[in-house]
Image 1 (cartoon, rainbow, N blue to C red):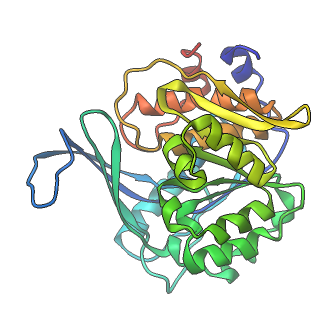
Image 2 (cartoon, rainbow, N blue to C red):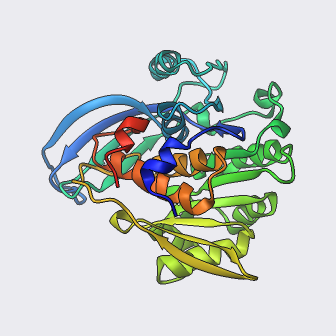
Length: 317
């Protein structure tokens, strides 16, 4: 496998990606430790930014100078105006949808270890309608990103129908995320039948597969989907499972040493890094190494949407 600097220097788009999902407002708060029921702890307000899984994934592609298409609906209300301003500043398309309410918002709370907890107030990004997608030709794309937040309930039904319009050889890059326990098994199976590449953290992957290690979880997900699966494992990097020489095998792709600030948006950034690599035709193991560096940079930064530029990635070797 090549050095990271060689991988970054080779990033030239060869395929097309589409990012579907949410952009909503993150209010970032630091606490020393999470409160238990009935407690009162002192917090420190840090900042208000636009985040959301899809916005964070798009941030990686944007900062690396890679082309992509996106659909992150903008509603009506106070938070929608903040989201619209952020999309416009980055040159992303603004799709205003009426009659479905405001965009969502989230309290992103980081404790002294850097681990994050979210309290989410969902908005129109969980009320998607089939007609909103009639403007797109899904057969044009090689990779389509969806998060677990959009896969639940009626919203998930709409997205599965929309994604069925993709080419048979196109992959859905699917990160179930913290909502994995809320997504029924039959819904996950439907995504697998569509053709999905899982990107998920070790804790969530082990819950999904009822396994005890990231390696076993990655293997189980790859066998279920029939495609590579990527399981992130914090400072230890990530586990890549895929079919190799007629059987499924797992290998660990190393991480990068950093001073942890918080993990807000780091999983989304990792997924964005994987998509960036695949978009540029990299071997999957190089795409995961790139993603490890992207996620490391975000974990060493405060808040969401803090993906690195190519120049900033050059620090990691």
